[in-house]
Structure formats: structure tokens, C-alpha cells
Image 1 (cartoon, protein in one colour):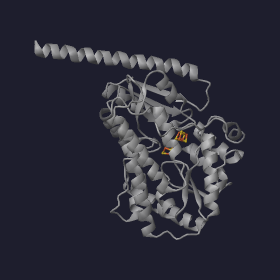
Image 2 (cartoon, protein in one colour):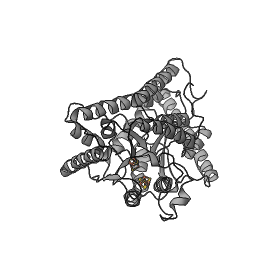
Image 3 (cartoon, rainbow, N blue to C red):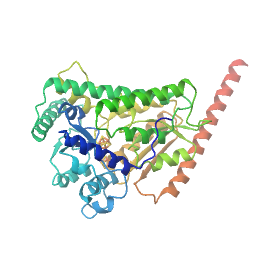
Length: 400
Ligand code: SF4
Ligand code: SF4
């Protein structure tokens, strides 16, 4: 493949930091983002560079635990540890950060994080279907725009916002093409390569260059499909990934799944297709379009988050899924509790094998996880054999 990732996430960060420094020397500003609710359109409209600052590795956690209690999720601890430990080359380059009140761990950590860098913590309504939720969120999006104007010393016009929306929609359309290339069976790419490549591409300086790379990646996957080039010879169980995401640095479970013979062909949630196929409406006044788009994000911090379940059902059918893996990081209440409803949908309604995994960024549970995942693959194979037998019996009965 033309696209491959040989660097660690630390190397990716270091390379990006060098490029960002040069861009900053040329007058560009950098805005940190921490979540799928951060309206990137505003940052692009301000002509600044958005940079994801979430932690995805174990190393910064010890530093964070000097301040935060150990029973916080690894995402919160790694993000905070990166910021205060002086080990992340990206944090010092952020002129400011946009963040949101999603889960409790994040919003309480942000109270400490804003001691280090100017932050706008947007107040995210958590019952998005309530009529008052939209007006409140729209006012938060307006405040975030004013915050960026002040911090970056720019004026953001409606034309700038419309341009930001077009840029993000273009990015989402390309990413959706990339996700849907994996509908083909066998898949053109492994889930591990997919997660590593897309998370590396996500660190960019120039948005136009980023779009060109996404377009080339989409084209390469489509060409592989046309030429019948697959990730592996015989395709193992096709897995849908849900819950919390995979990225370069924290993909231990994904690696174990694929080492055990499965292949992740679809992801729902952050890093997945449901975050890319939903576009902002270019016909609406721009701030409204941005507010609407982000209020539709289906994170477990929302209640009752019904859209996530509709998406899961649709994707299991569209991607011809054999089994579902649902990951929650340790101490993540929203995804842990919502997992019960995911299990009900997948196992009871769709009749598919389901595995819920709770883990952290360390390697200490790998042996135990490997045993569970191998057992899950066997369960899927047995379930597929039962289905095959039922279909054979049915066709014999019809032809008799
Ligand atoms: S899972 Fe929720 S809180 Fe975490 S990045 Fe995604 S939207 Fe944000
Ligand atoms: S949603 Fe869960 S995993 Fe994400 S930051 Fe909050 S507690 Fe951590």
C-alpha cells in the first residue's frame, strides 16, 4: 500500500510540531481540540490550524495521577498528563483550546487544564432533543466564535464560516468514502491499518493538503476493491466496532482482534463512520448549521442517545457484520452503562455475537484479553455455521 504508518504516535506528534512551528513563524495560529463536539468549522473560519490534543498513550498517566485520582478514565488522565508533563510537543503550540462539557471527568479536568492555556469550555446540553437545547447550544457556538476572535485577534465573517463548513463537509465526504470502501468483502484494508493511517492523516497543517491525501487514500482503497486486492486471503469474522475509539497509540484490543483472525470493517462513534457521514447543512445560516451538526453527535454523554442505536442497526446490516465489539475505557461511566443497551440491541434484537471490553492504555491485561477475544471468534464461527445449516435445511425443505 502507498499509505502505511511506520512511526509511533510520538514521532507523528514530533513531526507535526516542527511543521506547526514553521506555520506559526509564518503568522498562523493553532487551536487545540479535545472532542468530536469541538466545532472545527469555527477554527478553519478563523484561518487557524485545528490540532487534536487528546492523550492516547500510557506514558503521561503517571504524571496526571500526581494530581488526578487514579480512578479516572485513561483518556482524561493521558490528556491532562500530556499537558502538564512537558512531554507533548503540541500543547505548548496551542494558542487556545475549544472544549465542551461532555462527561464529568472531562469537565472537571478542564477546570485544571485552563490554568495552562486559554480555554473556552462550551456548555453542551445533554438532552439534545429538548426544544430549548438548540437555542442554548447555538449561543455556546456564538460564544466560542467570539472567544476565537479575541484569542486569535481576527474577525470571523459569515463568509468565513460558510468556507469552514464547506471545508469540513468536503473532509467528511472523503472520510465517508474511505469508511464505505470497507463494505466490500473481503475488505481492502485491515482495521488496524485503517485506524493508524486515518489517525496519522488527522494531524495536518494545511487543510487543502489533508483533503488531497484523503482523496488519494480513498482512491487507493477503491482501486484495491476493483482489482480484488484484500487485507487478507480468507476473510475472518467481519467485526463492527462501537463504544470508544481506536487510534494510533491505543489500539491494543483492535490488534488482538485481528491477530485472532477477525477483521474490523466498520466503526461507529468517534473515529467511525457516524462522525463523518453527517454533514452540516450548507443552506442554513452558518452558525445554525454548525450548531445543528454538532448537537447530532451521538456520544454516550447524551441521553437517551437513541440515534446511536439506529445507526448501529443500520451499519450491522450495511457492512454484513458477523459480530460486534464494544469498548469502554476503564472508569468511563457513560459508555459502561450504555453498553447494556448496546448488548440488548446486538444480541437480543439482531441475534449477533457481542463482546464488551473494558480496558485501559496499559499492556497488563493483554493475555486475559487475548483469551476472551479468541473465545469470541470461536463463538462467531459457531454462530455462522448454525446460520449456514439453517439456510441449507430451509433450501432443502423448499426444493423437496
Ligand atoms: S466519546 Fe464523547 S466525549 Fe469522547 S471524544 Fe467522542 S464525543 Fe467526545
Ligand atoms: S466519555 Fe468516557 S472515555 Fe471519554 S473522556 Fe469521558 S469518561 Fe473518559
